[in-house]
Image 1 (cartoon, rainbow, N blue to C red):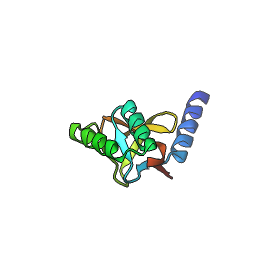
Image 2 (image 1 turned 60 degrees about the horizontal axis):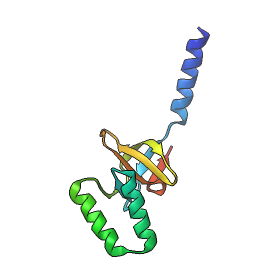
Image 3 (image 1 turned 45 degrees about the horizontal axis):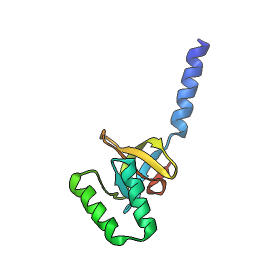
Image 4 (image 1 turned 45 degrees about the vertical axis):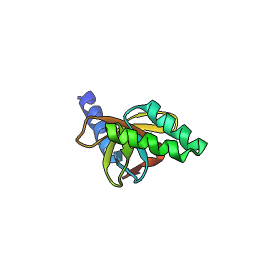
Length: 105
């Protein structure tokens, strides 16, 4: 009986503190973490032409793009400054920078 009560207590606590994550607009997302790392490096180098070419290639292949604001996502992994996520109702996982996702209670 004590175990059941403890499990119910933990479940209620988890639900009460659970919030939802949403995307912010105009941030980059990619299927592969290494593509995101490459894009970050290109931006750090200030190479706008290469960034544009890389984004076009990602969009054409369906392996990346720009986020739109307000889409619900679920976090599946966290890296150094990056987050892996998937859109609500979908199974494909993506990577983006942590600033691209906001928490709402």
